[in-house]
Length: 231
Image (cartoon, rainbow, N blue to C red; front, top):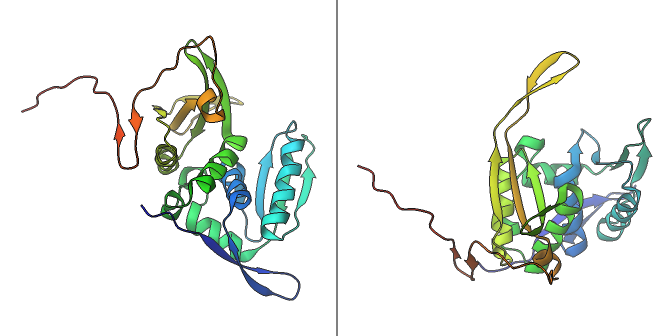
């Protein structure tokens, strides 16, 4: 596909003035973090971070101001959870139309897969900053993303392929959980993982490099496990 410049239109300031913001690396990072940790209310865009993520909250506030020209508030709840929020009706509409509302409905818009690779990378860096975990296995360390949205999982897979990565993918069935004596079922989840060392551009000297396929500008090449004949 042809890489293209993406943008969004916002109305900013006490004396409303419409402006067009090009989606650069900083804004793409903010969008990625919102997909990972964000929610929408009628008048507010929210980011929800843990008590230990004060540095991430400060970085987010700076990028929101530099990329969007908007100021946000940072609030700690009684449980020390951090909420970063601000208001912009145009941006609320943009986020819902492009990335979806609610964990089960989050998705990757088509224009993002056609964006420059540095913008795709920045978006994924924001997503990993919010939802990424690092897991160590006998084959080395891997960065893992977990989501309840099938659309988002497959969209992230496509973005990783665009950058030349061959990610692993698996799903986990819904399972019963119990809270205060009441039983409920968690949503089915989807996990994507990539090599930590490949993502960060480093190599583990004592580990052998494993891969499940190759990628070029047009195709993804994956190994065939078995071939069976069906009537």
